[in-house]
Image (cartoon, rainbow, N blue to C red; front, side, top):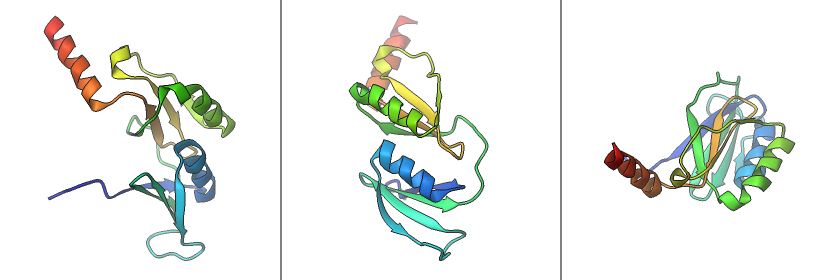
Length: 137
């Protein structure tokens, strides 16, 4: 039986550059680097964001899709976060249309086409909004 999320692995052309993005935008802390050694399939770096373990592995970028990883963020910090994302040269997307009850988001691609979302809403708010929409129909 599954009990929790173990980790997320991102394949990255430049794990150092991706590491800086993870630290600056997501507040990640680097825990370990394999350096030039290869224990798995390529060089790796290990990060933690809260309790979440993120691995970056050296490799070729992936194709762009809507598959994404969303992180909870304070909407009051969105202007500051947007500026930091722009400074890193990351591609910010136009957000999808949404109701205020769903929370706000910033969507952006990293250097290797991984889509990230910084989201101010939560599951309870989203479901409450969807239920209200169902009542109106």
